[in-house]
Image (tube, rainbow, N blue to C red; front, side, top):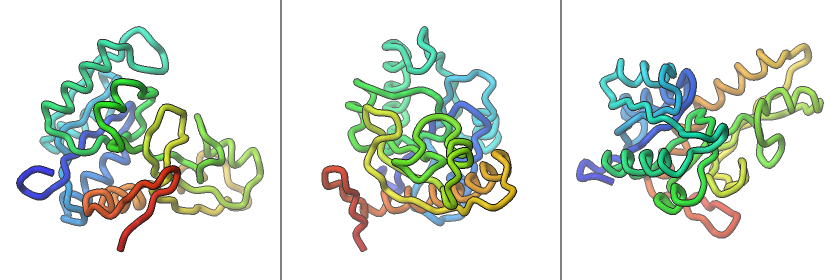
Length: 208
């Protein structure tokens, strides 16, 4: 943390940034001891960058490089450098569509978190809400987890359930899951900011 006692967040996103808005709003309302220091995207015209700039938060596009699903080495180094320059304590992924590996995770050990639209370990990967609907489950939800070398395989910090209703479409279910995400992500970040999260192997213990 910086000398204000607030956790400095670096938010990475590729899309509209609705989870960023939820987190930034919770910070502004004093609901968690944190502040968004910088927002970065791999998409030049991503809505998340416009939303950050509109709130007076540093917003930066960094090209992802030559790969389709991950950052190349040069891009990875640029992201790490920008986050360090912004003195970020915690990296928050908000719809960032690139897999982070290697040097990035070593640069921020157990300080990169993500939110996924299912109750992991069920339905990892893309369009998890559609996977849940197609499978026929009665409940799904969202998960905040640490990022590791796998895809949606990191230790689970917090989860929130969402019922699958009769007549749900992929769009209606996704919308309700997003509402749950907007509630859960600030709660999980507050636990991190308050030092109440302890990782024990695969398990995450929340201290009172």
